[in-house]
Amino acid sequence: MTTATTPRTQELLDQGYTLLENITTDEEAADALRDFGTLMPQYDGQLRYQVKAAPGFEDRRYSKSTNTILVHTEAPGWNPPPRYLALHCRVQARCGSGHTELADAYALTASLSEAERLAVHGEGVDWVGHNTGGTGTAGVHRPVVERTPEGRDVVRFSYNLLTAGHYDPPVDADVPADALPLGALGRELAVRAEAFFRAHKVSVLIPENSVLVWDNHRMLHARSSYGDARRHLTRYWLRES
Image 1 (spheres, rainbow, N blue to C red):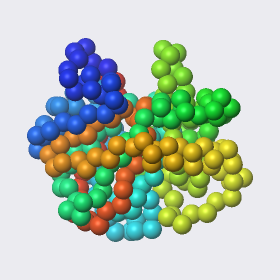
Image 2: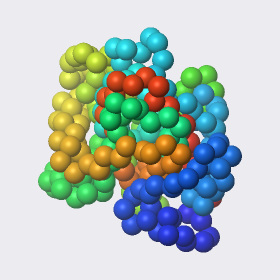
Image 3: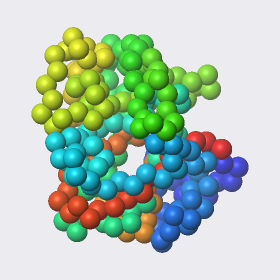
Image 4: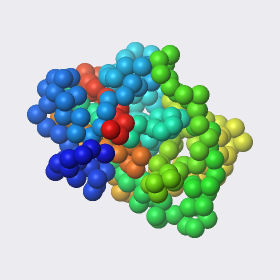
């Protein structure tokens, strides 16, 4: 991670997420995030991605819609996925929703049966590449939980991919099991994970001028729907320094 441990980096290690307050500009956010890692390009090749509703995505579960976004980790088709994610709230939704939701995937895997744990550690999934013409990968074939040579688990997950065959499907997508990356087993695991997530999640309505940081190799995340399209966050990806 970093050479120096601060209260915030220790909190991130202990619970998987932390909140940084009183950050008003892009430059202040980038400076604060240096404690956790190095900024890296995202799907479009840029270091910053603006999370804001835009026309044309009303029927999709996508960051530029106001719809609920279901449980996932970021960039599962990358090798490795970004270690940390950060969301800097610039304008909070005034409707009282648009929460960022987090739950510990390590706790989820610990709750599974032995057969289910064997599946998440041993069954490969085609995590397709996902970018918009900038940087990215062609995808990877990895299990849901990959053990690194150092003995640490990297979780890759997408409820949408496992149940609809697409990262950002239409809200009403209905896909037969034989067309899914892990078939009926993947759909069952996704439903199990979603139920665990709803029972154990932490919901954070990120205050304006604050940055929520979490461990993308460990934490599942989602977003509640919202009605105030002025909501605006800036997203960062970080690799370990």
